[in-house]
Length: 399
Image (tube, rainbow, N blue to C red; front, side):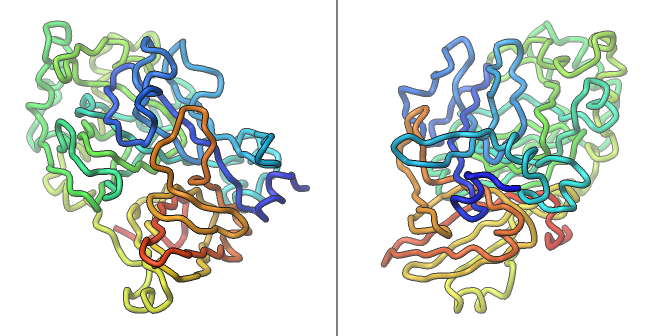
């Protein structure tokens, strides 16, 4: 069984840009989306500050969420009259042919996605529910990771620092008090946390259950396929957060049960004295750097040390042709340069209109990844740089 979209690129599939608004965010204007289109969903929906990649997960933005919001489309056929199919539907149709036997047998789908997150300020201190709490509302937990690409961070916006977890010694009673005073203004929950200065070209891993208030660098985020969250901070950038943003993924009978809300926080991980040592991630070379340079490329693990997902940053040097093999299927997004990827052109657009199709995002199926993808960089000066997001990559290093 196959499909014209799969056949056209011999297992490499072109994806359309997927834009997602957030009512509680102010766009940082680093996604290359045309400034006239930042509120393309309507001002009432908030600004577009996310672009999702290789997504089979619908965004959870409340009752106004559009039917396909957050879902990636595969584009195929004639450029003058292209056809589309949801990546989700194509994965369901082709199964292991798209994602490999192990992922298909274990998950019957594509269990991760990635995104660019681009907010002008910091997000509220929030948590993505753990397995027990997410399942109660029919959702999956959402561990995630961060990487701060150099190409998208020519400025740091308003607050390039992230609060992670809670200071060792913080008590549950202190957090409970923050919820009790929610409607008085600032509930001061970040007084109980620590902010870390974000470093471009590095990243973090954030397990489900860990409180975090992502800072204002434009961030690449591989994550588990869920949009579950609970905001624990009542006032951010002088903007009040409605209680519903804390309880949107909480059972109805628990939405004012403060003990239940606090139980969504993994207390052990949040109060680790060596939090940075456990979860900070510097890039790690895939192979010896001199060996890769001689072959015409550089590749680094940028998300690793967890059992859910992984990511790499691949650079193909100017004027070089390489064939890169990977252990499993992946999605990719271009950061810099132009050339070819298998039979497809690859380009890095400077400015994108809402609804415009591009040649900067692809999904590489399991057989294509295993066989190896030929990448040609015709430039005399400009490298090709791309980010690659994987589910359950067996080659990913330990932390």
